[in-house]
Length: 198
Image 1 (cartoon, helix red, strand yellow):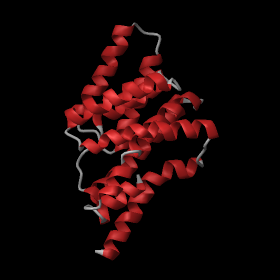
Image 2: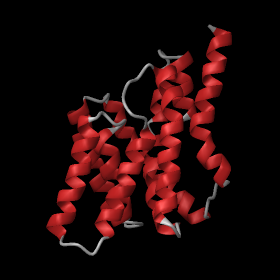
Image 3: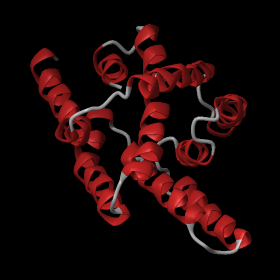
């Protein structure tokens, strides 16, 4: 993500930065699904991500001049979809609720939209079932490229599954403070750097 954002801010014509950056959103989506399995309190977990989304929105807007809601809002939506999926409610009702969240995310222009929300949900439902995850994520990514008119390099994001596999095998962990603060803090640093460089 940091490499991608450095590319956007300082090297918009260097394609490699954007290619590397395609790996970040799927990793965040997996992190949310993984966090849901590990958290002891869903409400606190959801509140932390929502607070992060709110705190990050202004630097996100200033840095990228992008009026959509940042990825943390989308990840919160995905988190709620997991929670709904796990409720002891009729399947039709759960699908209706999840569909409503996807509609809201799409209409109100959350970053990565339905693509990221469904990715979070897929990672949860098919946890560690890579033989199912891979074709599903390929299909979802291709559909999203068409729906949102993404650059075709978005398909590279599928390779993030390899990194996820390595993270799970190595029991990879990040300090909680770093984990939650990195998103807004890195944007503030990029804003300050841009003030001095440009």
